[in-house]
Length: 153
Image (cartoon, rainbow, N blue to C red; front, side):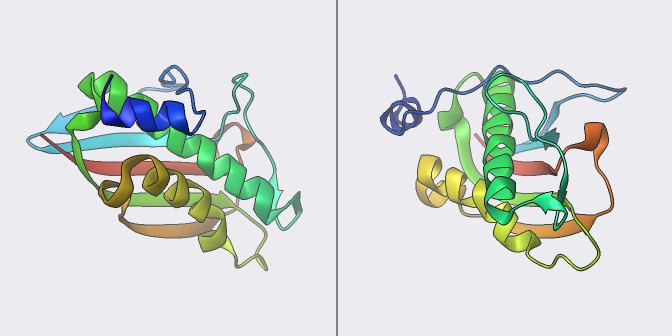
């Protein structure tokens, strides 16, 4: 068992199966020492999409939980691509999209749900640059979607 698998177990986290694309794209691509992971929407442990709009019925805390699930799906895609999460040398970039009302301005707080999870699991390797963007809507009415760029060995 790798150190990362042990950390997941210690945190009581079981990675979901890597979600399959819902349209004409691939879930990940490797180019040299970069792993690009397509946008992962928020799905809970049962596979249900976490839906709604921040600032209109979805709280910051619910958004953070949704972002956490996006990060778990990112890790699941990385494991599917690499076979071993220990091949990740750095999370370089997250781009977080938050379905939100025009007046909602806490997108960074929402995406912290993903950032915090990645640092908890990967330590300093999980620290990254990021953007947190408010959008009018997301696929399948998801409340959060996040994509990632990882450096790998």
